[in-house]
Image (cartoon, rainbow, N blue to C red; front, side, top):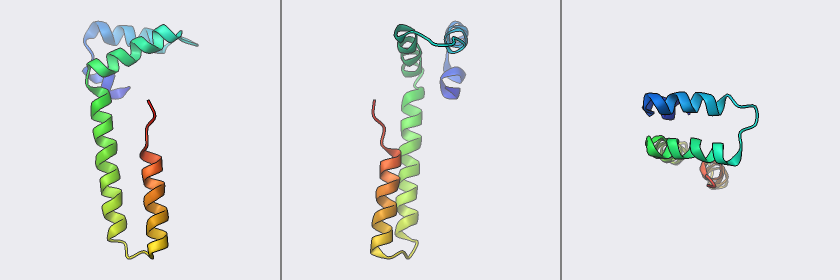
Length: 86
């Protein structure tokens, strides 16, 4: 949300504060937050950050001198942790 708020237009920022301040937003309100996040490019920026960090994790594991079994387990864990389901 930080990227969304930083990149949102002033009116959208006010709308986000209102929508996110709701105790239990409706599905329509949640979808509006998602729309704003996509429009501002925040979703793409976060996806790119996750991809870069996963790549760095795999590179670090490759250079860590681990056993094949440990490398495989940690690599799988990193990949699993980075997987997003939209």
